[in-house]
Image 1 (tube, one colour):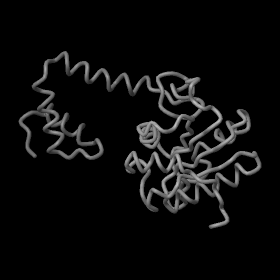
Image 2 (spheres, rainbow, N blue to C red):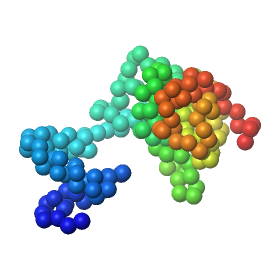
Image 3 (cartoon, rainbow, N blue to C red):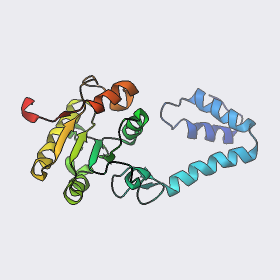
Image 4 (cartoon, rainbow, N blue to C red):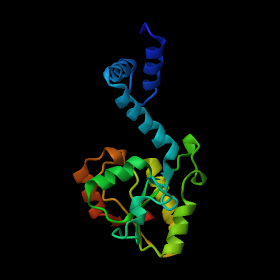
Length: 204
């Protein structure tokens, strides 16, 4: 792709680093911004820079937040006795979009995957165990994608949680094995949460 402007080329290359954005799409975005008033482009760039510099991670659940604690953890209307354990930020967003869950979350930051070099020590597991111990949590829902790595993670967490006298449940299998949680449609995900079952590792 030939450019008559190095500035345009640099901007296109920057956009093309984003996931799912190829050079043609990046060029279309750059040309769109070029047509906008400078003030609008300034607001756009300032929002990105401000987000990156000021975003925080909740000290309780590790969700993204504008403050030390996220709005979900601080919300007195949420059921603080119920924790939904997820892999990623996008999983929290997917579950929230169902409007069916009124508890809190705990973001693991991934799943156990020896092949990729991800062990329990790389995930937010210690803080989860600490929450269950300190806050007398009644139930922990494992809302983790039904993959081999996901099931391994659930099995490991269940073993760690067993001595803490807390109910451990998993999503109903309305979500196909091998699927990613974030891609499930809202109706299926909502039903999976509402019809969750107590986890039993005897089936492994």
